[in-house]
Length: 231
Image (tube, rainbow, N blue to C red):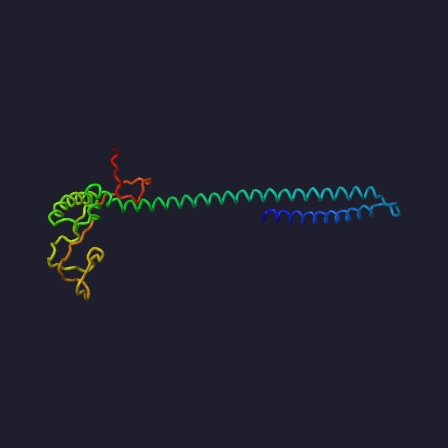
């Protein structure tokens, strides 16, 4: 709509300008022609009319050329603009899709360990079970099998080892430059290292990690699928 208005305005303005300049050129050439004529000669209206028609026709042709040139430029610009908008839209959709895939992949990596623990040791079933319905002896017998299978799964994927080699309740000295992410100081922490204390928990860290290869097409919210036995 804006281009149509611009084209109409340009067409009207250039037509008026072409007409005005055609008349001015006619008056100039007509004046020069009159000066070279013999004084007192009769006015040749046919010659002046032909001259005016030729100059005005030239002005109209120039006006049509300018109008068509602007029309083609506007149409080309509109096509490029639409192409650019389409390209930007495609890039935006592609970027949003990649972000969604990456988000789902990260979610699946987080859920994957729970999925494996469920598959190998029925870990989620154990956590969601109401243990108040069972005796301690019954729970102990069931937990032994779950514990063994889940431990094997964790060792396979994460290979956890203690942060500190010393045994719990053993006295240790924490030197200057220790990693606060690996060693958490509790109790009466005053002054600067070195600190002397008792190990209350050795902590855990990964010796190795085995990242799974996950498909982007799978539902990231599923820990374990339901099983239905068809009769």
